[in-house]
Amino acid sequence: MYTELSGKAIALAINKASRSIIADHGIKPKMLLIQVGEDPASSYYVQSIVNTAPKLGCEAELLTLESDCGQTKLLEIVLQANSDPTIHGIMIQKPLPKGIDDSLINLSVNPDKDLDALHPINLGKILMENEVFLPCTPAAVYYTLKYYGIDPKGKKTVILGRSNVVGKPLANILLWKRAFANATVTVCHSQTANLAEICQNADILIAAIGKPNFVTADMVATGSVLIDVGINEISKPDGGSTYVGDILFDACKEKAAAITPVPGGIGRITTSVLYLNLVKACLMAAGQNKVVDEYIDVIFNENQKKL
Image (tube, rainbow, N blue to C red):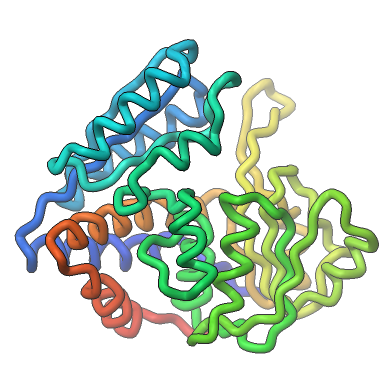
């Protein structure tokens, strides 16, 4: 019998930590949220971020730009936000339109305001285990393991996907020399040979490739833990649409010890992590950047589930 690793309780625990820190320290964290273009999926996520802000005691200023605004204008806005002391964090919704250099935009964000942790300095800090911010989706995976007491220490952990947003930073987080890390990590991608065989040997399989229902039951080991990062919109026979993950849930759940649902799993946690990073950024600006992890540890210890 499998356990469904719901993201709801984790998101609530992280939100509780953020609210407690904001109240205890009397701060008012403010985020600048930039959306370029009007991609429907992006707009849905952006609106979710904006709606969450007042519930946590934060402020989210949404700036929507036309898709043809150009790279120069976006850079000017980012540089202005970098120097604005009332803005503690910057979030740029991805993907960006063609013609805008994603790497250049990431480099332009002040690392101390980089809520997505995409600046090379922040990615380097993750590698060196002295991070300030954790990228939202990898952190959601990490907190899921921690909340449900799934210790990856020594476990064969396979990550499907090598993106700078999920796969690469997540691999480094799981390699940390600390609790709920110390995994033996294999990162797979489009050029990996014998992919199914590698997946079959995984104790923990994390799918983050953006291909609907890619992982089938014959690719997973009995008793494994399956973490689904993907969220893919697919058409239904009635002409509507629905969202599925990268893992074929109904088939794979019968072999798994535990599995995250889509929706309601990893995706639900990412917005909470984004605001936790905003709280960190606000505290850093006030010279108090160590308290967040203490709050998380206390709240997770109070609520932690065991498989």
